[in-house]
Image (spheres, rainbow, N blue to C red):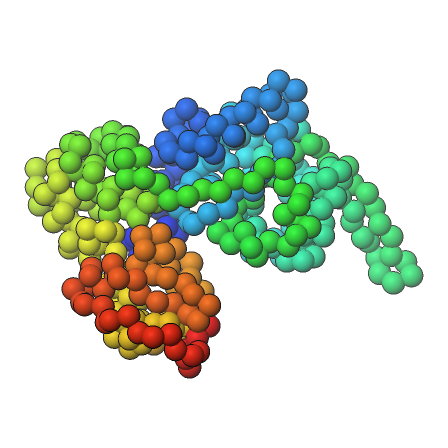
Length: 346
């Protein structure tokens, strides 16, 4: 299940994906933030170009909206290669993968989003393709079955996942580069907002960029989405220019507070505090109370709350941190003595 939220790092449709594409940097030099990742990637790409060979297979992992797809496009641009994109759930049959792999040219980049959702059968076909650049295809069945080795052009597989722990060990071991994308600092996000505003031909001052950046949950996709909403508000309710006041008024209407929390975030925290005395409580109990799937809460709500210290994960379940109580205008109870496991523990 996917929830369409203005502060979600997930893409919410083709139209937004098309607009995001126009805002994406084309080269590593244009890419803002993730300095250590950029340096590591720059060295790998430069070395591969000097050897006139494809760069090693790369796995990007981290929360949604941080730029994994953008980096795949950048790698293709930097290497002068074509980018072929697909996703784990869309590869249902071995023939789906075979058709893609056999059509790749030398040095092409194959980008698989949500690679942790590949089926075991598809993974088995990927192993020889990644290691030996050939694929073993079985034809016929039973006593007549035989394996045909199909040679492939040398290519680079770029995988992206929000759940690196869900990848099987054999698949994970076949990647040469592992790069983690972390949430962005507000200063980097403000730079991204200013850059995107220039591309969108929107006038914005530094205070306006800072205001949007601080509410963007450390995520560039969210920053660009908020910028477009504020742009619309500025054109209708103001003079078309974005400053701190215009950004505040616009995002208040969207239900996004000064820390980037929306209604679902606040409901999540209030559930822990009001229903379960601040925790600990299991994620399934929270999901049942909110009538949301626990996986949705784990992927779309919890990462940022953990990042800013509003949520704590313990062996006994989720607990609301002191800052969460304060943000919601509540006083945390006095520290309780350690209790045994509760009904709601994970």
